[in-house]
Length: 257
View: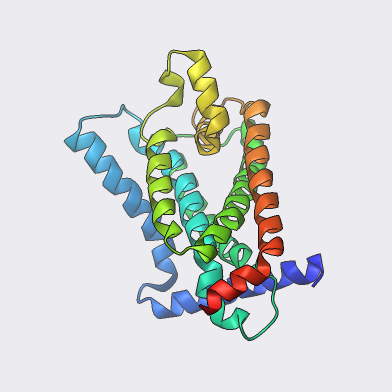
């Protein structure tokens, strides 16, 4: 299977999964709008009115932080579980295992388009304006997508080998959620060396700060952090692809057991 066939298969299967899921839900495609809003509203209520945290623009602050993180967490979790979920198909036909994480990641991309639309509407409704600097969203989104696919491929190896790893992914996502600056501003870290280390070691913290710099503060997303995000994504993706290829037979036997 060449690259173009793989891309075509990924797109076709992702669209089919979207239609299938929408047909199973009463509210259908409306859930793709409601889900990110409900997540943001829940955290906004807790932090604003229960913990008395956040400033004047805290709602938008949460929207711009939580929606990209939801994209990452849901895509990676779905992609990591995809091979195990499709073991019946794998045992019937010879299909490269890397296809399944990519299908699930691509499915989440189409859902994320609506989530981003919700985010832009919230920004415009709150008084923010489209600026020339918004072109930086393109490399940010591309880097975000590469990171998602890379981590999903890498984690899918472990989930296929040991399904218990799903619990580790849940703990990983929870830790990442509280250390990525969704509920607090990484720029408030007074020690510059610690702040820089966090933005390099935690690619989601760098991406979330980048989205906020571009959309809320008309700032510039620093290139070094974009390179760091790409390095994390590409490294994880390459290791995942190599592992899926090298341990393909062992993983298939694991699926049979």
